[in-house]
Image (cartoon, rainbow over all chains, first blue to last red; front, side, top):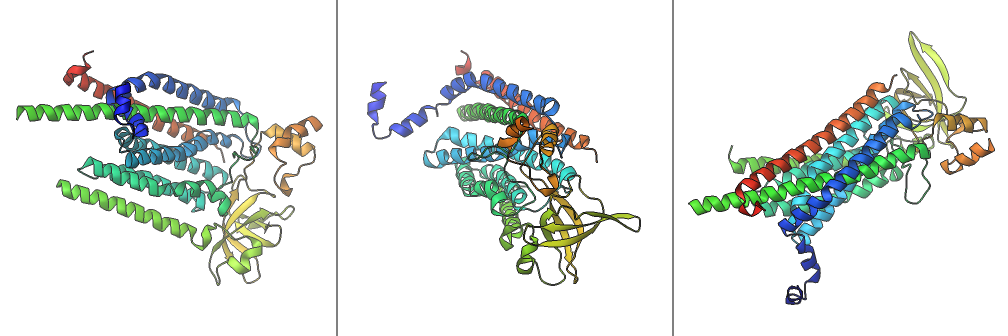
Length: 257
Length: 163
Length: 45
């Protein structure tokens, strides 16, 4: 072990990172952490949703429609959180040429797009009975729609090249350019007047929401984070195995030729 | 279809998608991205001439009047931003959240007499969420929804203790 | 206006979409694992 370390003293950081690039090691390690992460995610999400749907109080003016919040807000957080993780994977892919980061970025795309679509759809279902409109072109809703298009663009772009490496690179550049949209989404409700209300939960101030509504919301949100991580990990594991299958099949074909 | 063609279509799709996204972005954020104009800024920010725009603000307490226009329900109310207010007339069904003291965004045209003829009224929710019994408790201790937002959530427990 | 259909639609849609993501991930992993076990001699551990 010390031999390996002294062999390339100039690259300790990348060496560390690339330890996880070993597919066998990744499969073993992720196979061990995936079940607990998925279970925690499922348990927290189900608990939060049941709490929110049946036990949390109705809002004084929205009545029971406020319960849509327990799916809409976590979906919205996951949409942005997922895009941030896509950007981090893209940096790892561009800077360190990390093969697992390439695969993870490809797998984050569809999951993030699904949660963004959920955010838009549940928002629409909430907006119609409360505001009186399915959709309004205000800064918050438009910027989230742009996030959805960014995910779709990434999904298409990473699959658009015969040379996979070029697809990874193009997707990573798109993902990083799109990061500018994240602060726009977050602050759209403060920078411009919108139909969408400002944030109830901020890092700096006290939440403007009763604790009996805040707790189920946080449960679903944290459970969703675990669930998102579990989904992406499971898909990346499958992608690692699929890549190995492709390589083995190719080697077999070559050996027979 | 050849692989090259498929690739071309995919890249074309991406360019088209991103182009649409950018256009939508600038479309929505043109005139600095505001969704509506508040009453005190009508002179400065509302479109000139006979063009529809969105007027936003708070429904002034005590200004709501239910009327009848033929067989249809109609309402008149004043939309205020605390500095100026505008008389709004609307024929149609109001959203559930509409009430005095609520934020609204209305789409319509300004008439020569200075009133606003709305063809659509949307209710704006604020960032406060609270259970019904908490609202009752706050109303008992003097909060009037038609005058504006409830006290900060951090104070609710104090109100409960006090009430 | 009754809100129940909107609430049910929002929850139903969320469960369907997330459930589909989960099923897809599980099936994809199983398929890859089965193929790999069949063709990869090193997988015989």
